[in-house]
Length: 188
Image (cartoon, one colour):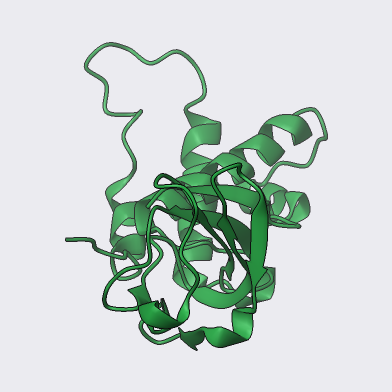
């Protein structure tokens, strides 16, 4: 089930001031670098855990409704269903009332009887679901994931030069991997 980002997070889980304090950087010369490292670290942690840290909206594309009636997005934690649409053969969208779907937050799934939903008019990507995912605001991010971001930023900041062949500097520190391990969403 393909998905793409519709609305990016409004802020990063770690502010520039917090990152600079963790790095013990007192000058403003590297502000742009540090800001980009925070964003990259958030994206990296989100990719490894398949959990959105800050609230954001993603669009899921489906070819057909699943027979089970359950749709489990590959990113979480699921917060809400913002919009649902089916497209006809010409690509025109018709809205579906999101209230038809039950949101199983614990399982991270949307549920609705497949027979109760309108069929799309095209065979490929005929269904669009806009979901809001993420822990919420920066203060809602689990502390271990926030610390993993801090440590990644510090690692990348200290090792931003050229890397020698055979060097392990480019690898993610084992401590960061350990911090995010319990938050990983596994897929079969």
